[in-house]
Image (tube, rainbow, N blue to C red; front, side, top):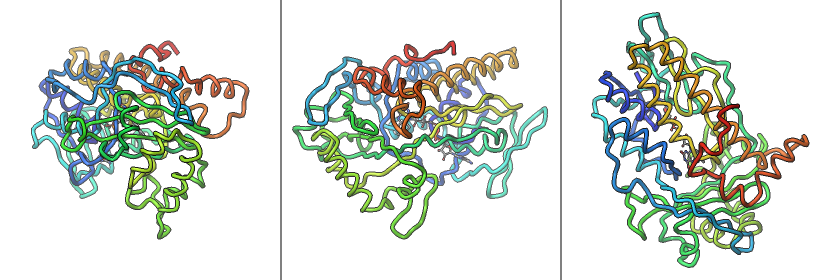
Length: 402
Ligand SMILES: Cc1cc2nc3c(=O)[nH]c(=O)nc-3n(C[C@H](O)[C@H](O)[C@H](O)COP(=O)(O)OP(=O)(O)OC[C@H]3O[C@@H](n4cnc5c(N)ncnc54)[C@H](O)[C@@H]3O)c2cc1C
């Protein structure tokens, strides 16, 4: 039983199916997830995990980016870096993975509310009163994982002290002069309190045709709990703790953000923000479990360890977690293989989490120790921003011996 039908859940299902397991995915959302828009920087690890699971990749999995460029607030070019990488969209990846699985393995509208287990099996309890039994249960239900809250309630979800303004718009809406400058590289702009970044991704119906793609951008802004709460509150006063629907964002907050952009960001970024009719926000949170296996229940993807997005590794990590778990569950020495999987994936996930915290160390609350100050100063240097933001060779940056 796989709880959560997004990236980690789909990867787990594909990999387990290849090993001959009978699988069922239970997804809380009652309709297709594919509408969730977002840009995703990808890595070779992701495609290796998919190939290992027997998946034939599309000819093009996203927009080919040549590297990065860093803009100064006046619009001048501070530097570029060649680092080829495929930038895809969440929707393209979701639809691609979903198409690998028969429809009868995927159940929408299934909200897990409890898990019970014995030495021989595990039982999932759903909100509609239904229950299902299986040999194993995989929690692939994301940062706010219900599975994790049931089996490891002690694990804390940390708000990092900043959120991201985000937008996803037709590339045709970006003024052509600005688009020409930023089209085939991830564009970054340093600003007080957090950087801006943006890149092209697949457009509607996963098209990669020039002129019909989407431009995806994000801008990190420091915000204490009160400011975050204000941004998650709509004009009627309703507060949305876990994320405000895009169409409920208050106009006064959007106006204030646009004014701040005019004062702090390069004109190219301002033009992209101005062309975005419905910017929205996402609070940045992170967390890390100390175990991935709890009897017959295992955690993968963001449910297990959520790194901050600066490292751009969540989808690849989810794929590798899931692929490794499927191998371990299918091994003849299952217990030993699971222990090894858990130890390797914990080491990797915590290294990713630590590095993502380093990358975000200059955003959020002001540093209050010398060590934090030094770390923050180091990580907002232009060369680090260019090279280490969603790096195309993530393992090179991770301290896997920590
Ligand atoms: C701003 C931002 C930018 C990012 N950029 C990148 C990037 O460039 N590259 C990259 O690789 N990653 C990036 N990420 C991270 C990436 O989006 C996540 O790591 C990835 O989506 C995790 O997948 P997941 O399947 O583990 O969790 P999720 O995608 O969160 O999916 C969890 C699923 O579980 C379901 N669910 C939850 N509770 C229940 C329940 N009780 N019962 C049943 N189902 C349930 C949810 O509906 C959801 O579909 C970014 C994240 C953010 C916030």
